[in-house]
Image (tube, rainbow, N blue to C red):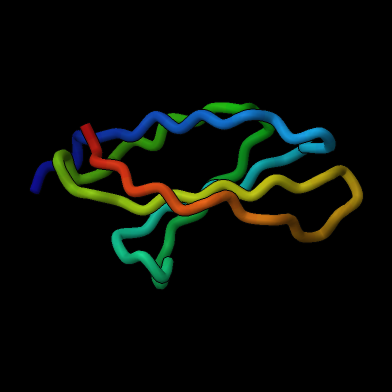
Length: 79
C-alpha cells in the first residue's frame, strides 16, 4: 500500500497543558504504537497508508508533571 496518507489531529488545550504526546496505532490496544511530541494544539501525521484506519490518542503534560492523562481513543481513516 502507498504511504501517501495523512491524518490531521486537533484538540482543545487543557487548563495547564504544556506539551502534548500523540500516539497512533493500527491496533486498539496501542501495541507497537508510534509516538510524536508537540507544543501545538494541532498536528498532521504524514506517511500513513491511505484509506487505512488508525487509532489516535493525545496526552497533555503540564510544565511540572512527568505524566499526563490520555484523551479518549478516536478511530480515524487516513486520507
